[in-house]
Length: 211
Image (cartoon, rainbow, N blue to C red; front, side, top):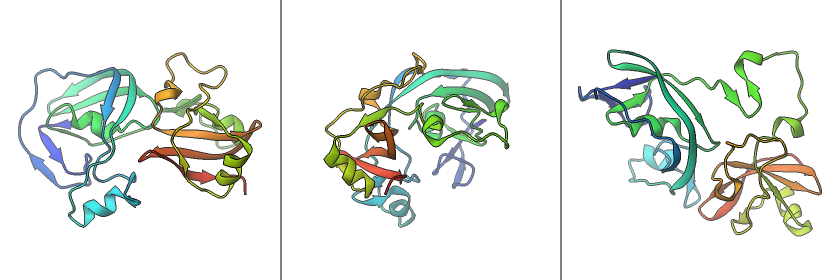
């Protein structure tokens, strides 16, 4: 849910809110390829440090631009300055930025209803999904022996090799792995080693599974 006519320095209701009163009669909801920069209060690293730490010190910050894909962006209801939105987007998309780009607006409530093949309506606390199966919706980067050893120790890699592509059975609207800016599976000979993400021309570890 977005709130119109207001601005937030964090893009959500936890930031410093400023009432502008500018509420557009109609909203332009972009789809397709969208260029974004991460919000100042985000965990993206710049110069080896998280952006939010720089922002909290009052330093001017600007994260690296990334290309994301918005497959669906629809208004489902509107009541005064509040509007309900449904968004289907690629991994790595900053929904707060999509909302802020509407004009004077911030993200007041956010609920993730689907991740890859898993939907909120199908959630089952008793169901156990193997890790490899749970992450097949992420693009895959198949590594050689040397890079696999580096990844096992969480070492950053140059962002020169491209992900191998979409996993088998992926939706045709899935993110094009060649321009993927979000998390990706790092594998060697079919074995899942870690999840990495591009940052400042490097691939950096988010989580390592194989030591």
